Length: 595
Image (cartoon, rainbow, N blue to C red; front, top):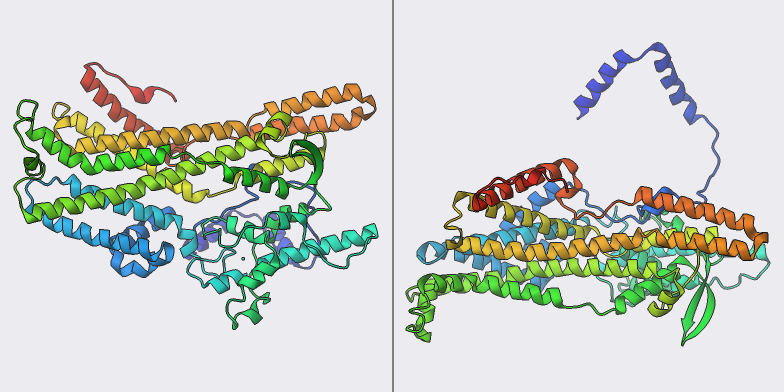
């Protein structure tokens, strides 16, 4: 790279004229000698990043996905050598369970060659699942494992608890001091005493309970720590007597200050909205900030009971995959005519083969592998489905804010977009809620489901093209069909939830309704027409801005890259077209159909 940079600079010099060289030298000399003043970012203005949501950034891995995939494969293939690392990123009990499954997998692969009735998919299937699960988990925890506590705002799980709490406390102390100093200055301006620096009400209101937050790859931990009382943070950091004197050491790097400009702008003496709340059926008014409103919405989402339908569905599919080899062999060797002539004691011999210790050991091992590994995979899919449901709940409750009836029913605050300040807070709250909860980790799971479904679909199409007459005579093909059907069910569910969430956030009817309300108010109060016209113009701009920034919902994976998406669409749909054409007897070209 140094050679490339040198040659680029070398050939670039031949393109420069004398005026360009002189300008470059003047700029380099003049910039350092210019007088500079102390500046600050105005918190009353917004950036496009706030509306887009990138202001509330999430932690990202330092390595590309190819390197993370390679590391994941190595850590799974040589699992015993990375056992301590797996304990750090999971737990001792889970790592021990996976280690047992690892040795069972090795034993099953050795015994496979001695069992005539065994099928290759019974060994290859669990192996692929273990590799996939390990690779996905390595990508999820990459932000935790690849960063040290010395250069990351969110401490890694490998760091000591005392050091973690002493650092997520430096952050709390910094923002707390900034907030208190702002309130002190505001109090002096208003002529009121500033004896005891009290914490802002948002921080007291949204303080999370101790021990309720596990470490994650998102920066939600940082936000929740920022909303904690510093007394609790200092108490947590005093677990060790040796570490306590250093808890106030500011030599630890603090997180990016620009990310806290929004939090500072939500100071009680600054951005607040007059909202209506309902207490025991009575309508009351209160001045609330974005943090308070988002905290109430978060509480409402947490108390909603989540259904167990997809968890039960995943369990049924896991049981089906575990029993599929035995059912397939029974169906192959028995028919309706001789089914009644076989006794119950003879069924195991028909399903497994001649009585043999190696045969029984092999099928017990493969059954255990299928149950645990398939169960873990469907468990991860249920986690992704639950996250998508919570995102939809956030979107629904957000859309209820400006509706009095829906806000009362959902027990959340209600306010109108009748002021420019209210519109700003509405946009801030919208972006903040969209970024709540796990993001990248769930995206990794969804991408894995998507890629696995594509791969299985391609294999099924290839098998159909090769010989569709004997397609159902293979145990592997039956297993692939079960997997494909289950993955399609989850993908359709995720696509439905994601599209509905996107529709809730992109619903322009809320802004249009508020514009109508402004016109009604102009008619009742013509003396405020100029002021209301300004708000109306801001609402129009906000509608255009949201349409400009929002994009249609798309499942992650290959669809993110247009080139790879088009290539995949042509390859997969061409294979499906060929398979369907071979079955039906006439040509169908699905890949030419535009989505």
